[in-house]
Length: 114
Length: 134
Image (spheres, rainbow over the protein chains, first blue to last red):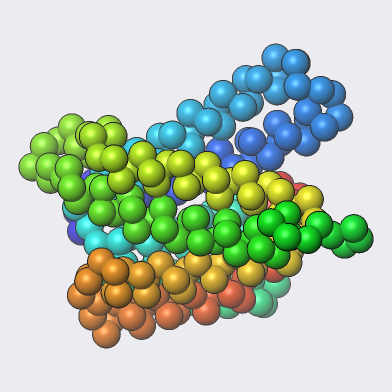
């Protein structure tokens, strides 16, 4: 796999995770403050744009690689969330989470070599 | 979980439908992408040429349907239960690639897929809890 392909896989997953978290924030905000505030609308627009970017990057990658090759990389999104939680929430990583993240990483390395 | 609707509104049925929609949409996206694939063109990295395939549009509809039923599921089933269950799709997609897309999956790739699936199963609950707080 070329560096470009790996870079695009990472970008498509990062934009997907970011979009999910931004949309979740927007929904929580709307539950408390209603839907008409510009804060809510701007978050929804950013979330949808990021989702769209992620979707089309995936569509570009699917033209070049097997789905069985690309799909396991979605495990990376779990790694991103774990890192984000450790940084933002100052969350200590449990043994279960650490082992799971290591297994996913090892699995992705094997798939990328296949 | 009180007053759980029955019939089509049953949240467990909707969870199953949501997973099925994600599964089928992944396979349709792959088929659609292959129908219009132009690997030599730099522009095709953007994926925009994928819109030329009707299968991609069907996949988009299914993604929207899965999203709607997922939001419905979360009204009745807590995320840290629904999310781990929904990850069954991680097993279905590689099997679908093998059975429906006839992709040749080497032993090495199967091992990698298995490790990812086991890892995802381990972290599903803690990740769902983290996502709720992020």
